[in-house]
Length: 116
Length: 106
Image 1 (cartoon, rainbow over the protein chains, first blue to last red):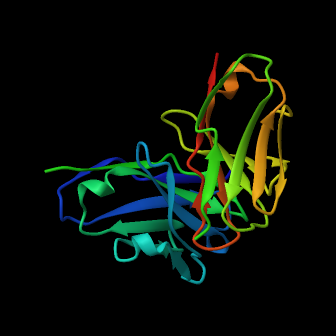
Image 2 (image 1 turned 180 degrees about the horizontal axis):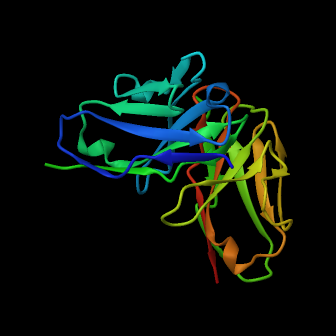
């Protein structure tokens, strides 16, 4: 079955960078866009950007340009999101999702806490 | 970007009651998708392309709409339907979500 397995929770210092992983299984990884979504309490769901692993093509929400960088490794069927210059505003749960014309399968989420 | 406005933001319904959640788009969109999220879990695709139920979604749910106005309806509320529901447009980048409707059981 289609699954997306995300990396575990992280506690980070302000100013640091980090990378979240999203390992896909059960489908042809290179053929489907991977979407990334941020969720903070009281802020609903925010779309960060997406990437097509087979081509490397990506799109970003303007709000997250310079903050998030999306990449993928087709040899390991893993998508990555790097977050840079972390601040308290980056404390959130981050989800990856497969896009089949709609976000049909979601990872369990990665909780990022930024604190000194 | 296309702004999606959901109403109401919070509501409660009794078992058996009909529930309607609306999603208004600032510009016309081709389809609307809906997600259900329960506390501590990731969102689940619930209704896709306006009116298609995702796998496993009970038939008491339905979706409708076009252009700038969409809705999710529960014909008869059940306790398990208590959750937050989000609409989402995937017509124009950036993809956007509504602010969510928290549905509680009375």
